[in-house]
Picture 1 (cartoon, rainbow, N blue to C red):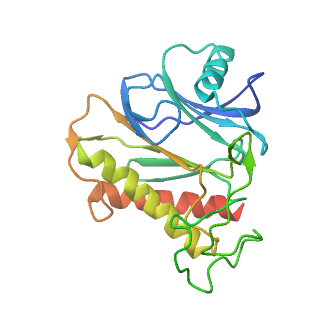
Picture 2 (picture 1 turned 90 degrees about the vertical axis):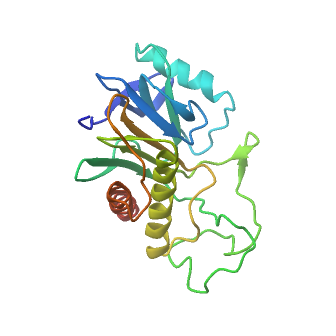
Length: 231
C-alpha cells in the first residue's frame, strides 16, 4: 500500500475543517477512536476539527453528518481534536507514514496521583500540579479536548498481537516526545490513534519498538509529535 495524503475539507458539520483519508484498495484499521474504534475495514478516516468547548456526545452521528456533507458513503473511523487540522505534522520512514495533530492544552498523567519527576512539566502553564488528581475541565459532561491524534499507515499487514503492538509502540513514542519536551503529562484524556494497513498484504507478527516495523513506527510518531509541539 502506498500511503495516501489526507485531504483538508470543509462542511457545515465541520466548520473548523476535517482531514480525510481514503484508499483505493481495501484497508484494515485498528484504532482507539470513539467512532469506528477496534478492528475495522474503513471506507474513510476523519480527523475532525472541533471548538475547545465542544460538548456533543453523539459522536457517531456527528461523524455521519460530516460524511454526508462531504458526499462520502460507507463506514469509517472518526477522530476529534481542538488542535488545528490544517497543519498536521507528517513524518515517514521506510514505508511507514504518520500524520499527527498535536494539542496539549490540557495534558494529564496516565496514573494520576503517582510520583512525578520534579522537573516534569517545564513547558506547561496548566494550573494542575504534576501527580495530583485535579480533573480536566468538563464541557457537556466530557473532558475538554486537547487531544493528540495519530494516523499511522503501513505498507504491510499486522496479524493478531502485531496490531496491538503497533498501537502500544505509537503511544510510547508519543509519550517519549512529550516527556522530552517537558510537557506536564503522558498525553491528554482524549488522545487517539489509528493504525491502517492493506487488507490483502502478507501479515507481520511483530510491531513492538525493537521489531523492524515497530522501530519505524516509533521513530516516525516521535518525530511527528515533536514537530507538532514545536509549531
